[in-house]
Image (cartoon, rainbow, N blue to C red; front, side):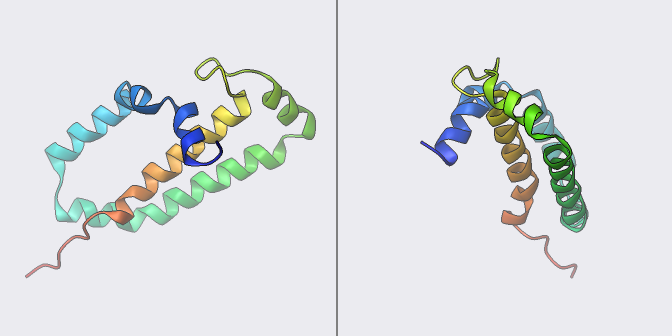
Length: 113
């Protein structure tokens, strides 16, 4: 059960998504202020944001020794009892990155007339 199914279960599934305050805030802000200029700005800054996210994750993983990561792998997560804290952290990271990449798969802003 590895892959997307496991990530989705650890993340909290539809219930976790619907309870996300940040999701609803993002939807409201998107509906209130969406313009082609705003979309263009997001697409221009996306590589920097994604790069800084990946660097942060690498720093956390690489700067931790073997023992702290092993402990995180043994401790059960409060939000997803069938997963360890380490898997929970990775699921949240995958979600964070996939949400940040989602604008790449939407409609590109149209060119000005």
